[in-house]
Structures are given as structure tokens and as C-alpha cells.
Image 1: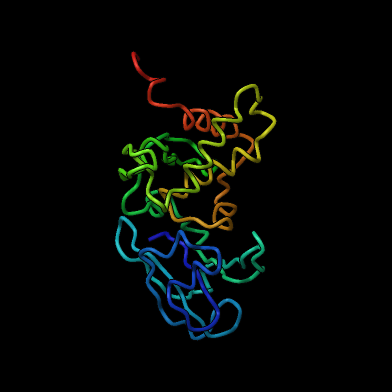
Image 2: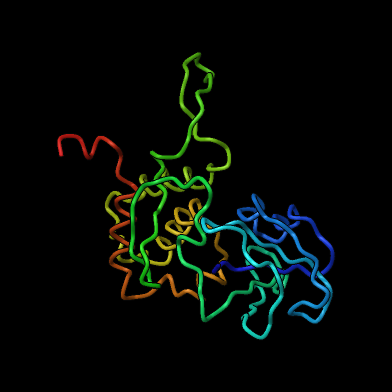
Amino acid sequence: MAHFQVYLSGQHQSDELAQRGLSGLVDGAFRAECMTGPDGKRGSLFGWMTTKGKIDNAYRPERQKWIPAVPMDGLEAGRYWVGYDPQNPPTPEDLQRRYPYRGVRSLLGDGNEWWLAKETEIPATMKLADNGEWKFIPQRQFDEFCQATATWRSIMAGVNPHYMVAEIVEFVRLAVGINYRLTPEIESELGLWTDKTSGTVLQSFLLLLMRPEVFVGE
């Protein structure tokens, strides 16, 4: 089974992943002890169930490639390591979360189609607002994505999206991450973001921002 693994130096439980900037990987992670990891130290290996079953959560340097974490959002480099088999790289099917949310299907740089979650498909809970009205509010774990969707809708009027490719990719990364287990390093290794697929990504981005009423009458 093709799925990446995450290594942390020292003895840790899965909740430590969140402290290393991998909060999206805590759910469903299972741990194995690693006597000698990619940094030459004793540590913890984390794996996940895939649609095909449980992965082989073992350190096998002879066939795995291990990449140290890059510094990001104030977190230091090397805070975790990500490993995978280059001869059997993970696919969307391998990385898909247990309960994906459909939205827009997009062809990315690895040659595979990925489902990008759409705000209108995100589960919401009815809450009582300050004015006494009941409103559907997206569940808390999707706050960042839903707020980003609202922000992009407000700024897109009169803006040419072709000049904002890097920012748009960041938003699309949020949409992909809702449905799949990924790290920035794995996204880079798989080559998800390329100039050849930038047009597809831009189209997907615009579709993600469309409200349901846009499709009425089609």
C-alpha cells in the first residue's frame, strides 16, 4: 500500500503531530516504535489506514525516501520527517480520508484527479444567532477553509486571478487537504502543482467560489 509515513524523534503519541504543524494528520494515526529513524535516533513512526487496509508502518530505508520538514509558519526545520516509496508513490485513493466531501474534481500535476472540497458540501450545524435567528454554521474544524472561501469571494470582484497564482494555490491546497492526508513535502514530491496544470487549478478555484444558485437552470 502506498502511503507516506511520518517520523518524530523521541517517544510521542499522535497528538504531538498537531504541535509539529500536522493537525490534519492526527485523526486515525497509529504509532509504531522505531529503534533507528532517518535522523539516526530512536523515535516514533506514524501510519494510517487506507481504502485498501493498514499500511506497513515500518522504517525501511533501503526502499524509502525520507524528507525532513521545511520551516513553516514559525515552526523549525526537521521537526518531523516524511517517508514514502518512490517506486510506489501514493495516489489520491491511498491518501483519501475516511469521509471525503465532494466538490470539484481537478487534474493535478501528478496526472491524477483529486476531489477538492467545496464550502457548500461542508457539514454545518444549526446555531442560534444573537438576533434570535437560527443559522447553519460550518463545523469548527472547517473554519479556516470556509473563512478563506468567503475572503476570496469578496476580493475577486475586479481582480484578475492570473496575477495571484501562488495565493490561489494556497487556497486550493486547503480544499485538497480536507479530503486527503498530505504534507507540504509530499505535495512537492508528488509534483501536484505545476505550470502545465495551472489552468486547471485556476478553473477549479473559480468553481469552488461559485454559490449553488449559479447552477440553477442548468
